[in-house]
Length: 367
Image (tube, rainbow, N blue to C red; front, side, top):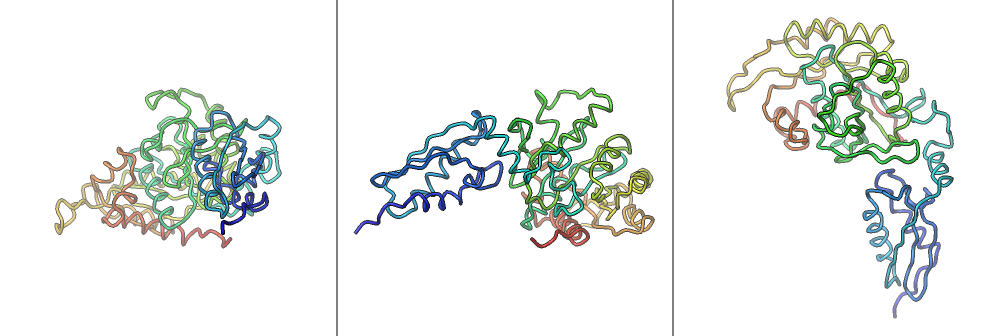
């Protein structure tokens, strides 16, 4: 005896398991299911896309079909797609922002009660591997099941898109920007908004400030985000001040190499953090000893102990020492962090250790 076709309530309950792949919420909760019709074992669903050019429309259709075909009594599933009206999009945006439309309430991590932990990764000077540390820490946190985002605040010298293997433009729903995603890590960079990665950004301070506040306030990072890592540009200027003013609950990790010159400059980043009331929670020493062959003694090309000295000077922990390994550079160029490609290598383990200590220093609340 064949099963009876499901009723509308059961169909909607099943569709509640289907998430919008960019917004990470149920299409039912987002009011994306406009119509459901059931007749002789055939279920017809009309779903509304946020925009007509939705890049993941095929994924949404496939998810709806797969979920409904698993219901007893369903012989056929037909899915048609429409597009939300401007009023429907505004209602969606308001719902995603918790019912608030004020610019100061758009991002969940703008309040002291936020469960999202904002970690600013700084260096003071360029060339110490700050962006490399950022992407690998994000990959390590994600590996531990954390929901992670990366904001590329290095507007003039952005490199996060290449290191994460991402290209293309983010989806724009009216004034809300949906970040791109790779391996579950949400990413936003000025590089996604330029014609190509070779384009130069030639802006004065006000435009820089506007870009950063847009990335913070207009990007839909999601209310489930646990860690937002912000890749800071070298130096102690406009970007650091903007972030400190906009994100008063953020913490700083300082990246240095072992050499004295890098440590001295990194101290300036710590002084900047102190002046803007941003807590430094630890030091990462990058480009530590290089091991020329398995089992060989390490060679300290850039000196030794700079990270520990800086940590002692500042009275904060040394979170870890990252070895100098060509595979780290190769992974960055290929868009695959070494934590993702080779997590059990010495470098992969070092990054994972830093991520563990970071999570201990700045734990996320139990949800």
